[in-house]
Length: 307
View 1 (cartoon, rainbow, N blue to C red):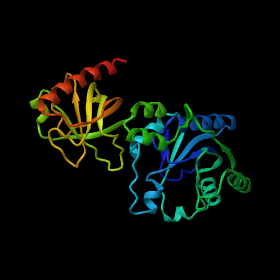
View 2 (tube, rainbow, N blue to C red; view 1 turned 60 degrees about the vertical axis):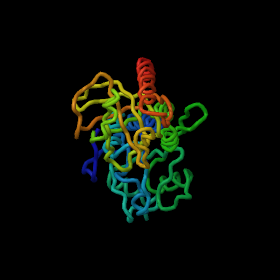
View 3 (cartoon, rainbow, N blue to C red; view 1 turned 135 degrees about the horizontal axis):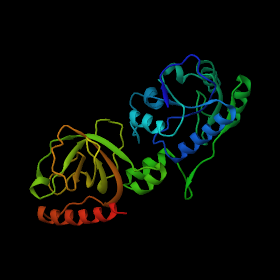
View 4 (cartoon, one colour; view 1 turned 90 degrees about the vertical axis):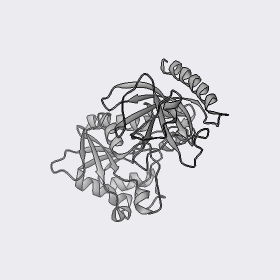
C-alpha cells in the first residue's frame, strides 16, 4: 500500500471509498473488499480516502474526539487490508465548504477517481442532508460511478465505529474485538508509580497513553497480552481506574502486571491488547484483601488467556 499525502501525477484510475475509518473494523474491511473487487473488474487501482484529523475536530475548537485508533495505527491497519492506496487529506475550512458534488470533482481531477463507494451510513459534503440518490445524480453529472455498501452485522447490531467505542467504554472488549476482527490495543510509555504493587508481590507497569484522543476502556480488571519493546509477547492482567484501595483518586490510572517478567521498562513503550474483562474495580477492606483478590485475578487471567 502507498500512502498519499498529496496528489500524485500519473495515478491510474481509482475505485475508492471515503471515510474516517476509525477502527478499520469488519464493516470497513467488507467495504474495502468490495472496492478491491470492483477495481479488479475495471482494471483500476483500489483506494480509500481518509483524513488525518477528525473533521469535527477541525470545525469545532472545543470538540475532543475519542478514537479507537491513533492516526499512525489507522494507517498501519489500512495497510494490512491489501488496498493499493490510502489517500490522506488534511480537512480544513475550505474543504468543509465543498458540496458532495464539488468533492467528487476534486477527487476526479486530483486523483483520477473513476468510481466511488459510499458506506451505508456515510454522509459527506457541505449539505449533510443529501443521501445516496443525490450522490448518484452528482456522479452521473461529473462522470464518477457511485456504488453503495451494505451494513455488516454482529448479531442484530450494525457494525460501526460508534458501536465499538460504546462496547469499549463499557468494558466489553470481547464484543468490541468481534466487531474489530482484532483485539483492541493501546500503546504507552511506562512511567514511575507509587511502588505499592511491588510491595505486595504484584509489580505493575504504569502506562501513560500519549495520544489524548486514544480511547481508554472502562474501569476494571482485564486479561491482556503485553508486547514488550523487543516485540516479545507476554501474558498479563491490567487495571484501569482510580486505585480505590490504596490511592483513591479522581485521576484514572492504567497499570499492568506482566506475568513472569522482571525487567526494567521505565521510559519504554509497550503495547497492551485487551482479551477479556475479568471484574469491575472496587475498594477492598485492606491491602491484604487486595493481594488475595489479585491472586484470584491472576488465576482467572491465566485461564482466559489459554483459550
